[in-house]
Image 1 (spheres, rainbow, N blue to C red):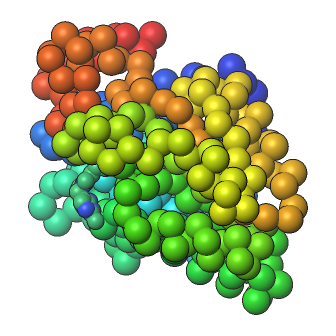
Image 2 (image 1 turned 45 degrees about the horizontal axis):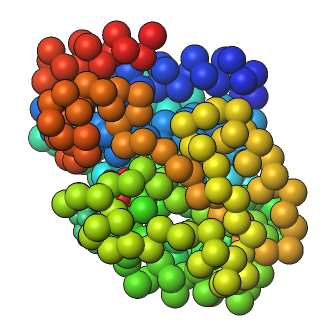
Length: 276
Ligand SMILES: Cc1ncc(C[n+]2csc(CCOP(=O)(O)OP(=O)(O)O)c2C)c(N)n1
Ligand SMILES: [Mg+2]
């Protein structure tokens, strides 16, 4: 595990974003925009010194856990894990190809370092609670991070899990809500408006921070603050843009959500150029 400086983290996030675009365009399917919004948080987790892990020992009982509950955004996970040394870039370029273990949703049975097979939205926080309780029972100090989508927050199971995490005072659990404003069929506020996440989670007894989730400095600061919370579960409401930072290109295409659509080769080229 490495601990990069702020500038290095920003550069790493660009590399990861380029990989997201390349592998989904190569696949001709997948969820680039859901992955791009989450790239800063995932980069900070893996490279900002927050998660302890060793790609050579993916089953180390002491490793920190990251559960990507919005499993369709796995291109961001595969890209970060490739950069971290779990996979090669050639391997993740097989995304969604027949027979490839780099499936369209993460499969813990086929890939090392994947903590949960996700994709059926709503389950990841419950799985994370299992890890966090197991750590307590086993006397281990590892931390569990779970990332959910803002659309995913409409799943009832998430709210049962939020209540349970508080009941068990899980101080070794951090949830991140990637609040990118859209879900599959439109704006999250229009589909089911649960977006005052901070007061809702606070009412459940959680510690909550709301941040600009595509600003690496804010992401790092929030993860540091979360580390300091020792009496209850903590949540980071990460306000992002779906497709960040190439939203203007998607708007020009007439679809700022661009859910579940890979970029054409031409659009991918423009998007990569826009990353700088
Ligand atoms: C239980 C369940 N219902 C529906 C879907 C289909 N689905 C896939 S992605 C998605 C939208 C998710 O939106 P959000 O959580 O906001 O994630 P984003 O793509 O915006 O990051 C939906 C409804 C699913 N995967 N699981
Ligand atoms: Mg969303």
